[in-house]
Image 1 (cartoon, rainbow, N blue to C red):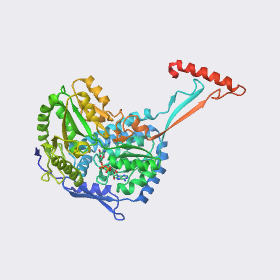
Image 2: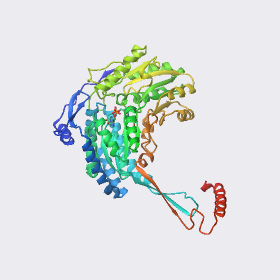
Image 3: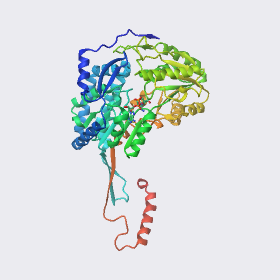
Image 4: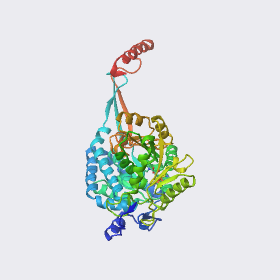
Length: 523
Ligand code: NAD
């Protein structure tokens, strides 16, 4: 493992000005200090807002929502299309900030930009069709005209994590806005500046100020009042916090969607193309230093290729470059914080104590940056070790061996989580058959995570403790609406007409029910 030449980002005057422009005044409130993980230095600070700020912001959002919803879909979409272009035009500024604030590599930062552009394009062009009112089958043929409408819910609260600070701040907001809602966004304490810049670009694209506001602060302080005052809550974060948030949303009957943690399996069958598999496995486990919800942490490899896969995978891991430069050279960046580093260190220490083998990695790299950790591959992991079933959320992978397809599926499903899985085989039929039996919201065949994540027209989210609801596709925009059914009864009532005895009406209805079962379109 080598590291690229260290080119520490030094605060240019222009960059400092950008941060100052983004942060609101911290003099009247406690300040949250934001750290640059590459160096451990302070990047800047933002105010720790309070409950009364949440009340003010959500009231402004509610006031602004009506006139935003009254605009045509095309007018709302025009803002998002303009935003798409602005994000691509201003990518250097955005990527520099994402890297400095999160410590990730440029490659991982670019994935965020890609996602924002794809989401903007998709919903700006397809959102209207998803939201359109449509005729539904009425209670009685010809006599009942039934239409389904989708109305905006009102104010959508979004609570976001630090690991993908650009995309998880705005990609869920875009469909909510296009559906006619206003949004209040609470970014993670660690990465508020990226959210502030992303939202300032949306304003530049023409979004009215109060329609999307960012409120910075601690989750435990401003999370609860935001949940209470939101008409819908979109949460992305850990399963642990997600359960607390869902409980509170439940107490208020606030509708919500939860995108939570994973412990994602990768399955390699004997017939897999090992060259492609190793390349995909590297991306699937070490992108963003493993701090990706759909990252693959459990590898199940069929016995016939177990040794060959291990040899090639470990060699590829040892070739990865760690580095801090603001360009596309380093393969792997930093962990995001001291807490993350501690968690990764403790998971690996626990496996060592309990007898696992560290095939490569296993050490922190303070020589590269304060929170760097080597990409690590473990073998001989047993169920009593923390890494066996707890999400590490770092660059740590465990290798296991399996014999039969049945065993591979059972072991992949042996988890409370069900977010993402990856299956490698040259037999497409087998790939699909296995995929359908894996209890994960997305399964990629001969890809790690991008195929399913990038299929923006299809739902994305978690089974089991990995989530509630879905983002992307039709589901990802309709969740921000209240469905309404309007049914008009024509000519005859759905009851005995005046003068018709009840026995005759029920006889007629019984005959009608029998007939409807025979007409294909009415079943
Ligand atoms: P976290 O749960 O600690 O924090 C997420 C957000 O919740 C932050 O903004 C935080 O301030 C806020 N929060 C904390 N306590 C709160 C409370 N009591 N009420 C309301 N909000 C509160 O998660 P994290 O460490 O920032 O992110 C990492 C986790 O997120 C990992 O488990 C990862 O798998 C998961 N994640 C999931 C997805 C997905 O799409 N499924 C995407 C990214 C990250």
